Length: 215
Length: 253
Image (tube, one colour):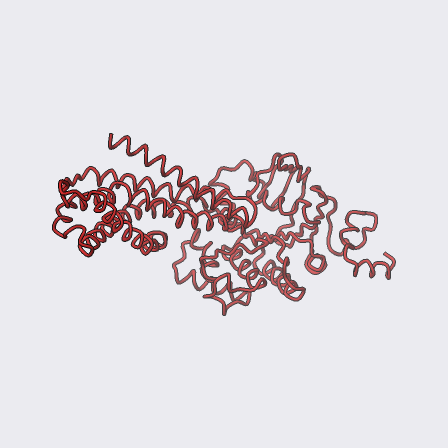
């Protein structure tokens, strides 16, 4: 529960700010790029919804969480390793990997899809708000677009991505932190390696899941 | 009783322990002394299973720890308390939670009982006032004392202390030595202290093992340690400080 609170709820402010502005920017960019009388306005709402649900709320938020939560996990576990706290657990007969890593993996696998859904809502609502405020997309058109061609399968696809990304964001940095050797410099280096590796793995997995589920 | 038979350990090409055989005296303080890098800590880490020896036997009451399964090792480890050089307190827990932790893992005590017992151990190390402090709020000496309280909270048969005096001033070092000595006799633990502090050797060194370049060079008591001028390595170690060198000159040892 503590891990869910720290890693999940602790990320809400960041996810809120980013989702809000990205939703708003998607609406402005889409509106300015499809400035044609033949293209209906509701496509702006449709594009915002599709962008948020299919890619932004899972992959982009995932990459941001790798930077925020992943580096924190690698640093926390790495520091525990170099200050012999992990050795202390081992000597007490505690399975340190299970004790330290499993709660983090479970917390992020549970919390990442929740953050994804939250990000979808914030992004779509901010787009609606900005569309109405700037007059680029009237409220009714936006709502029609956001509801248009809604496929539950796409939400399932996004949820599966969020679950898989949650696993990567917790497990890869945990691995780098757990096996760190040396001192503070090595912990920093492990944290950097963890973020880079997790990001690459996340992008590769994003491609694989997308090809498997959407093609 | 802990017995080591022909222990060898290397890290890559570097041979750290060479044919270490020794027997720790049960219920008393045993000191592993030697220069930094001589292999003292490696011996302790092999005994508790943090390092696996390349060959040899580590016997806990005639049971070979090296060949035990994970569950058997886990059982033995419940009888071990370990004070780390840097104390290794859990940063995210308060002092009281740190001391309660081993009980939470292995005992059937209720939460209230655990709290009471942890308070009792903190009282033994004279830290009753520090229950709610976090490790980052403690001084070096206080951290060592919390580490000792945590190490003894599982009522271990064996207490390991890795350089308990490192980084402490001479007065606090004496307090820590006295505390370990008092707890050893009160709890009847077999205490193994890794140190290169000659003050500790002289005040609490009932059984001393001198490790030199990964080998057991000498063993005896602190009373015998000064009477070995023929053992050059031991003599050089004991009289390393310029103060003792002067004393030695004066008394013509």
